[in-house]
Image (cartoon, rainbow, N blue to C red; front, side, top):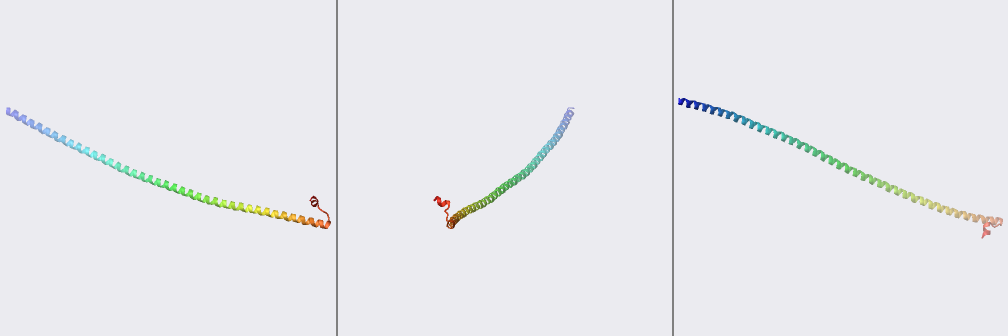
Length: 153
């Protein structure tokens, strides 16, 4: 009977060993499944992160291009404004010079006219004085009377 007890114990031990091996096999399968799921989740997270990094790089490149275009446009606008301002200054300087020359020319003409009028007035006055002298002399000769002016002398 002892043999039967040993044999029963051996059978039970082998059954327990088989159950433990089955349990180990099931646990190993679950552990592998969890490891696979963990690796899949990590790969998915990495893929999502890489996609987000890619999208951010595209966005950064787009923003950088936009900023560079805006900077270029700003510099171009400033250069055009400066150029336009310089052109306007040049035109205004030309206008000022032309007006100054015209004003100086007109002032010279007016001075010349005044000078000519003064000269003509002096000549006319001199002629009138000569005419007065000639008329006095003629009056004296025809009337024989001395004028007040001759008396004052």
